[in-house]
Amino acid sequence: MRTALVSLAAAAVVAAATPAMADEARIEARTGMVWNGQDSQGTAGVAAGYDYDLGKSPFFVGVQGSADKSFDGDTRVTWGAGGRAGVKVTPDTKLYATANWQSKFCRTCNSGVGVGGGVEQSVGTRYFINAQYQHVLIGDYTPDADVGLVGVGVKF
Image (cartoon, rainbow, N blue to C red; front, side, top):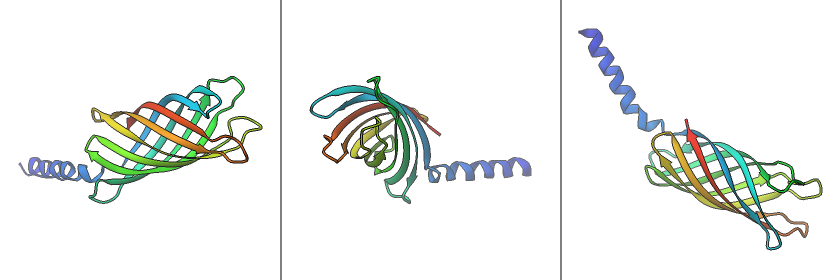
């Protein structure tokens, strides 16, 4: 009987602590469009990150890395590193702002800094879908670009 009570008490402690462990890692596959007023092309890639809850508030911050490839054959993989900050509008919906650095997508191109925002919607307990917009500031007389992405991913 004592073993059963101790086991039940341990299970209750773990169940009560579960909401406090809401920080989550994520990985996603994504696709979308890149345009700059002169040209547009498709893109696809992956992103991985980790979100940290800010106490008991609905706010969070996160870090993210990405690798995206334009469908144009003369480009190379664009690597990105940055973060996001946002609010959980509901337990299953996050609104966030993003900022990141992106490597150049061709030998003669410039790297850029992207700023934007998005929405992430949980689908069940482990999966999510999202939509994101970014404006990429390139500089050196290169036209800035805009990026629209949609993704599917898994949280763990």
